[in-house]
Length: 424
Image (cartoon, rainbow, N blue to C red):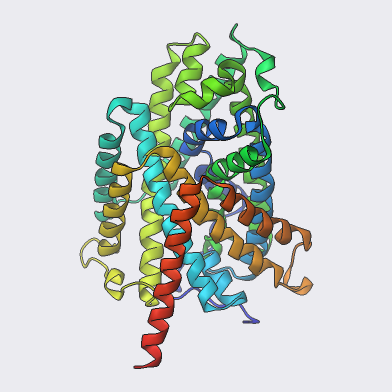
């Protein structure tokens, strides 16, 4: 176990610390308040029925524990890489690798879910074709070295918040509101609530983006622990307002039956004029998230390839565009394949499994911190670790099986690489 922070391999020394608390909160909001809320409500309602709100609360509790553990670790290890660094430094190289592998597979599925969200809202009858086209287009954008700017992030957050606010107001002021639809005890089961929490966790996972900016935040020991809970709390308020409003209009059954819940809620509330606005807002949110996700997954792939945890050929940087072009092309091809064959619920479930495994490593790493190193109260990483594991294995069986197989494949590849290295 390392006693002093060390930078993530392959990170240049010239990263500048320019981000304050408000900047970091905005980045967290931009990462969380996006297409997740447009996509995850329906599968969660199918799992929990009227227990959807309980699932949202449970997902928020686990997310808070994860956020707190990640914040304390990020303050201790202010280097880019997130749990890939924390696991390596606190638990050993394998756990850092497993966190990185979980991040790549989980976020690759997130990319597919975002692409399918674009298709579902823009052209429901051809959702898969639109999803593949979106992946191809944004992979080309990233390949050319065009990255999402901070200004674009602000614009996307503003558009999404405006659309969500419009949906909430339209629903709450309509004549179709029925408070009986919030009767949580009517059809909820414990297993269903757990599964809904696991699926809704998909919409909270972006707060780690703050922690991964450890080398670019001013006074990270103070800024990161403040920014993550603020961003998470604001996101929870927004999500709760949206979920309550949609449930009041559609009810659990109506919400579960639609692939585009916010447009259906607007239509049911008698605000037909709002439907195209919601479609555009969902598409903007999903495209923004997809662009950032492809960018992030390809860079994590690059870092792991440089460390020889993935084929070293993926560490190649294009001589003209200065991007990890092989990693981007591979990520784009995998995402396009998943988007062409999976449904949104399957992609969200698989993504949640990978991301929950990632945060399980983060909580286990936080448990090893000493009080002098800023360890949170023991109950926080304990609840976070148990919560991550419980929610991961409460997901739909297909997501659990496929996620476990992919993680096992990653662990086997690590063991094989170590065996070959010992014999060279």
